[in-house]
Length: 340
Length: 219
Image (cartoon, rainbow over all chains, first blue to last red; front, side, top):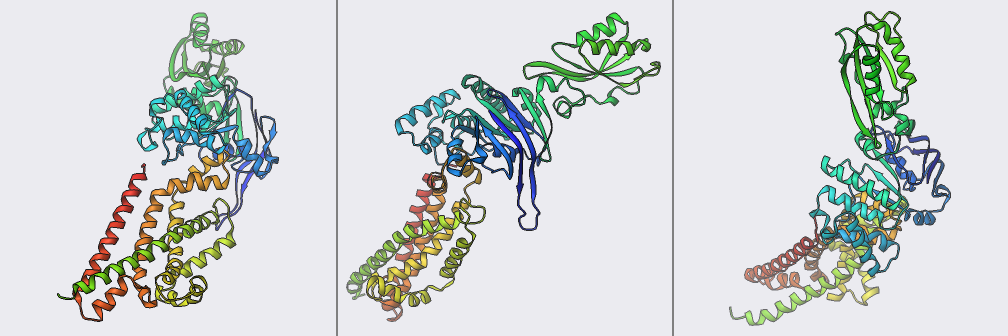
């Protein structure tokens, strides 16, 4: 549905500052119906990247294709038409203060030349969809942050888009509102079959709603893929960002060997414990880590301190690997002998 | 004071002349100053339709109009006035320099108001497929409306003050009245009365403008 090919965006030098390469050769593919995330530190080019998709920024080079149409080749007036099949939601909502909630939802319809009666009907329908039907006559100043963002989502959906772009849509919201907005995004995506591209610096947001994600750093994609796959990949910077590995020193100085395991639905911690404790008779203590729900599945990274007959540990690590558990021995322990 | 009955009709006539000059000049100023302010905003670097050269030329003209003392402008534009009105004397003739003086003033205020509309709102409209003129019509002007009304109010008050000088070209009005009946005939009471009348008019305008702006502001 969305495809970027080797896209670069260079902002020309301005005043005393030199030219800035905001996006540096990014290729990205989002399938129809996918909920994709772009994460990265501030200044990594995320916001520019999402603006390249609806051509609010024209790429310096490379191509942008949405729904089979190569937008980067189109003249301005055709780009404007294409934008109507994409909704966009912003960090600071960007609702018009001079209009009511319903008036804001009608705005894109007005721009598309939809008649007044139809606009009214559609705005009411959309406000119902985002559970704000009874606040149709309220001005943005009378709404909470979460409510404003829900109105903004209704507005973004007014033109029946296929693609929804979210630029830090929850970053200005408190925890409860964030949850509400994310639930809404998930719901409308399922009900309307949308393709969503979401930009955020909050890993919790990616874990809550995304099927896939890319990690952006200084304008380049450094890692990415479907979360289910990324989280069980070794040495993945994106996995490290999503589920920080427990620090090895959390369990240092107490003897024994330290082992870091990644557990999943298919290879849960019970399998690990069964092997280490049940079959090999080792003593296992959880020194750190957490288990969370990500992309609808259960994932965790645990740091285990293993004591007992450590000569058996090497074999155990191999056994676990064969069972599909990601295992890494971070500290061999005193009696481990041939530690890895 | 035996001559009040002689002064009153003249005072009323002068007040009428002031309202006529200011009213017409204000109307034309809004019709010209708002589009000029929009043009200044959108052609600026980083604006909706950047045209650096045009922007600089417009900016220069506006600054020129604002830098000139009104009394000088009054004399300078006399040929233009004659071209439009046919004469350089009288209330109607005074409307031309009043308008020329006030348009740049309002244009700058409009520019300031439009600049204060969050760029994100413009971007949101563009993301919905808005054309540039749609952005001006549906985002910039409506969002800046309370501030634009405040700008128009300030401009009209300035026009009233300018119009006091219109007496210099035989335009009549309250300023002219205060000079001829008050100052030149050593009638401080008449001068004071005129000042009070002007104050009442300005206060009423400001009050109405503020009220209107506040009613439209949803923040």
